[in-house]
Length: 469
Ligand code: NAD
Image (cartoon, rainbow, N blue to C red; front, side, top):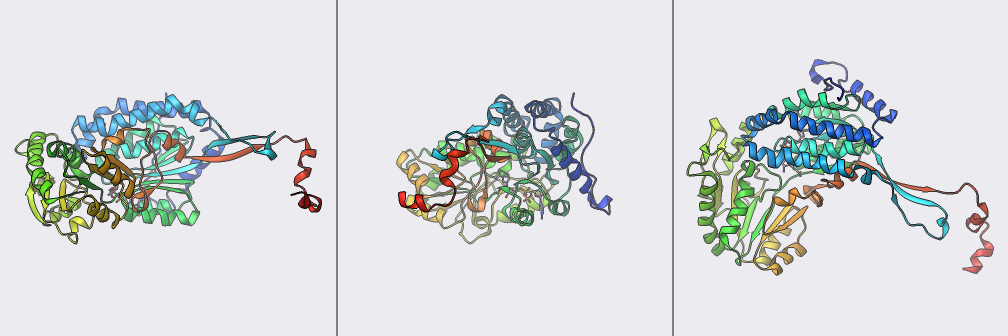
């Protein structure tokens, strides 16, 4: 059985001295003791994490329902199963991932042994957001533990129900010498970031991403920044509008639109818009019924602040579908906006809610020009029956990920790296990519201690050799 005991740090306001110092020292000492190095230890931690998910499934379902009105099915497919799959993959491949990778040698190093060693960084910090508060906290943790690091985990303070379960229960499963949890918001995280870590993995907004990167600069700490932005979705005239409506509505309204890879806006011709609107209306009714507010399958906005922000966005352009809201329930109806101006707030900020504006373009070239005028998005989607159109969009744009004729589902593939580019972030993870992210790839060359005669060719004086070249 894993060591029992809570390892999370008390709230900083409870202590006048630095509340993190002792914990961080303890974790560093544990790392230097070498206890996280053996594969068996790492596997034990991963198995314990798996047991945490299995034995606390109901608690996690309840917390996710409390935070985001997630149904058990939503929670399973977008949070718990994804974490469990990542754990299983890491357990199956741990030995292979940890193995030294041979490097080829050249004439000078023919007799040497060249290899890349996957070495844990040491003490790593993971900072998570609230929208998939189990998935986005634990999937990075899987890779950090598999790679043999000691970890400080900072879940989001906004998804309170999930934060509570993680804080109270998770430390009981993990070895408390090597793992600590820090609770709190901007102030506490800011204080924590003053300290030196060997790696920081941050998921959240570009605004806070800049704060994290600035703090990391002070210690020259490497970072992964998994950020957000506005993900474009191009819909070509050559499409079946009902198929597009089904796929787009599913991943725009999933988790009430609070998904970093959700399509933020559609780009299509006015003619396609006329065909899409009835199709989207019929899909929304099929998914959520005539009264989406009473549907068990539609999420709620995380808090009042985000609810008010989103309600204000409903005033942009013209509401074509939905538009209702209920403050007491933090409910925003699945909404489609048309006649939107590029300068309106809904096209200026990441929406992160169940609102889908449609922008009109005259065709593929104008859509590409529209996308390339903006920051590089985390995800980009293109719908068309023509593979030429999809390929042109792929070739002439840049984004963290790209999906033709679907979306979201690419997140289930741990064979593909997940991450942003430019303003949507830096670095990548999922599957082996997470293990590699949390490993320093150390270049190693082991040479024979003798055979010195062979080296004479590289030692000065060079005068006789220059003439030979
Ligand atoms: P956020 O940036 O507000 O918060 C993320 C984390 O940073 C939280 O743990 C929070 O406590 C901490 N934090 C907040 N302010 C801070 C400060 N001033 N100093 C230090 N730490 C601070 O993001 P959020 O609202 O939790 O999540 C939504 C954002 O995250 C969206 O932009 C979304 O696109 C993005 N996101 C990205 C991904 C991805 O994988 N790329 C996934 C989910 C969400």
